[in-house]
Image (tube, rainbow, N blue to C red; front, top):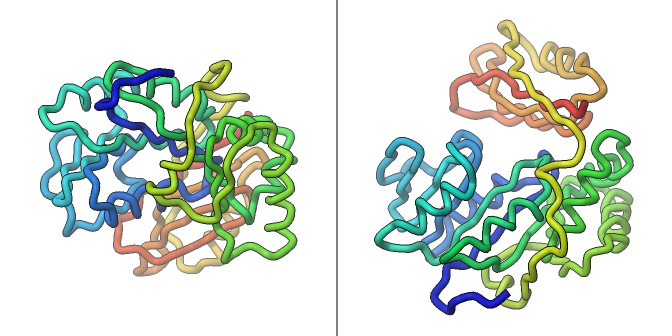
Length: 277
């Protein structure tokens, strides 16, 4: 697709639930020297260093390094057009796709006037890729995400076994889309990747997903938390939120049956559970 030389490039960051999209986006916001506008579903999922925040206005966070973080309040197209109306345009727009969405559909918005698609980057969770790919409920969604990519990035390598990484690489190599595979991600690397429009734009996501917020009673131990999580239905594919165990706030991140707990200073939020129906 032909675009004006002065149009703003767009990078779509996709990947299945828990693949590390918000971690990557937070790194972009805190480490870049470029003026980036990031569109996310929820501010709370992106842990922005408080020292970088210049102001918070409605659904926009302005950062001291010239970046801006926009919560997706209306449609994605509306949010992008609001960015295009700004007096000073960003150097780059980064869109975080939902963990159950098809990045190909999201990338269609990159062809609005004043923008062009630089690349669709899809993160692949090395620990859970094999289980996700073979899951009857979500395997097709996972496959479509990989096949939509111009760039594939393997995440959680440090936590994965050699067998898990090998299985993940097999899945990536069998993907039908001719994506470039990278072991890490940088904005500079995208200059080597030519993005082209997808031949077809399917619906926003494959399959049916639903969610609920789980508010747990006061907990006194990690074991109590694990009992609650292990009691979730088998079609619960993702759980994320902050709970209090004793006097400590704990961030809970669960993909399938794999759970990671980490201490946080943030207040409890309850746990958002996503189900594949």
